[in-house]
Image (cartoon, one colour):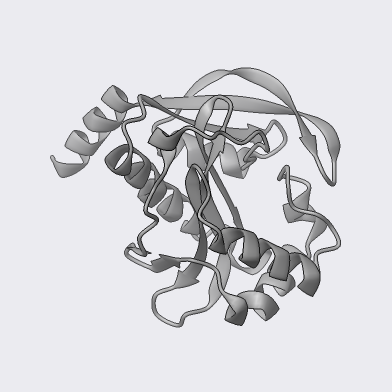
Length: 196
């Protein structure tokens, strides 16, 4: 998943950023105790190449910078450390970012935890948060065209294809991305279906 770098100052996108608990995850603010696990998982070129803002190599200085930036109250959105509810193990990060197009969903999971549904579980929680905590009409998401796993997560959340674009990735340079959007009416319908 690619979260783009253009930031928005739209106050209507501000979110209180509560701790979120899903079936298997505790989604909380990243903190200093996460540094070792964050570095171990984020220092993977395969992860960084799929994102816009993650550098590679990724060391302690980058982890400290990310945690410090996450602790500051952003104008829009929020960042979460994804941890396993059962063990507390750090598995990745996810968040909502303010961009020029509005609020955008972003996430990454460390390689040892791939293909276990954690990205989808976190994404569902963040989609719900975005629509419940703000008045947005549309939530955006995007992924590299070469990232079918992220595309599946986006589809499972109900996003619809909205076109292609280019993105400047710190690691991969200028890359093509697919853009997706989920409108509030569709989200409401999907939430209703889930209860049936």
